[in-house]
Length: 193
Image (cartoon, rainbow, N blue to C red; front, side, top):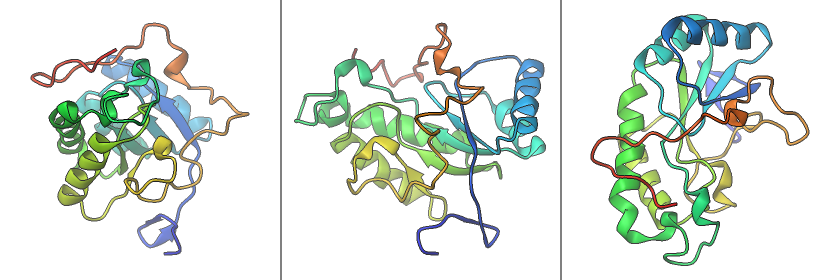
């Protein structure tokens, strides 16, 4: 409907907190309830896959989730030339697609998950296009987004409020956590630095 995300037939706006912690169930529940009480209604996963209970908690607490594939190739730079970044190096296609589909199949049945994100800080290129096509083949109704697509064809429209405003750091921006790190999925291998 005019590029707006409709949930249960209603236009929905988001107040988004970024989240990449790996906490036990009790600590996660406390953190999510605190986010909800602070006025956030969306949690965008960044950099780190979450355990199943994370999605269960978001379902029960009433927080929307933008789940994100475990892809961050920012250490490779932002070159979009072929091979300039793992995102545009065809030899990494299967790893990218596998991580996107692993994310999808992990969280697809949770009503809190209203959209899927291809990656974080990974430039754009062939592998994200292929990941987008794989996700769109698996998921027909929820949007697939990628904030860093730069107007290219692989994300669906990015709803306003998904990315926190540049002048406002969310109180729960866990990207500042020095202990945060990407976690490889078995068999997918690490992304290049």
